[in-house]
Image 1 (cartoon, each protein chain N blue to C red):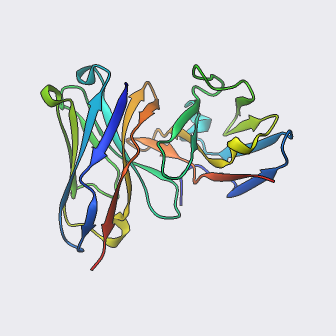
Image 2 (image 1 turned 120 degrees about the vertical axis):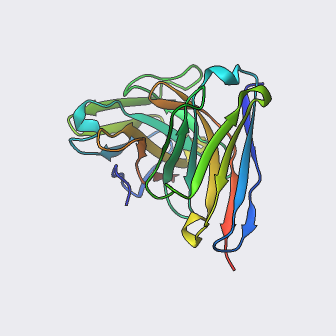
Length: 117
Length: 111
């Protein structure tokens, strides 16, 4: 089955760190660029990061630039998001997302990150 | 504030037709970037509904259709069904930003 499964979410204090993982299966992960998208409670979707197939190119939304780092391990069919200096406004469901051209054709079910003291 | 603007909510009775608008600007939709639509039921993975303005992925009923004109786009749903009750998001690209941009989402209620 073609799917993306996120993990690693949880409760973390402001200023803390968390690492999200995304396990891909059912398709050739190493041939796809990948993204992270998040949704804060009661808010819309927000694209936050992109990584190219060979990890040579990464992009970040201004809201997370300098604090979050996207990475991947093609041998393990996995995508990661290292989140540092977390803030209350980073509280959201984080989705691992596969792009097809300029849109997203495969989404995971998400993992919830709560930043609170 | 989302880069693309959608109405917070729309509603319709079963069998009726509803439309959801998505308004952008000259740096995204108006710059010629395509618009895509997603259906999202809370707790589930968002689902691609329309890509490249008007195209439906395999398995999406033809009750769903998309259009684009100028700096705006629309999603139309005909023959409303109870199962259509969900949140709908438009998405495009922005010339002045380094990634994709989304609308704020529209909650569809089937009366």
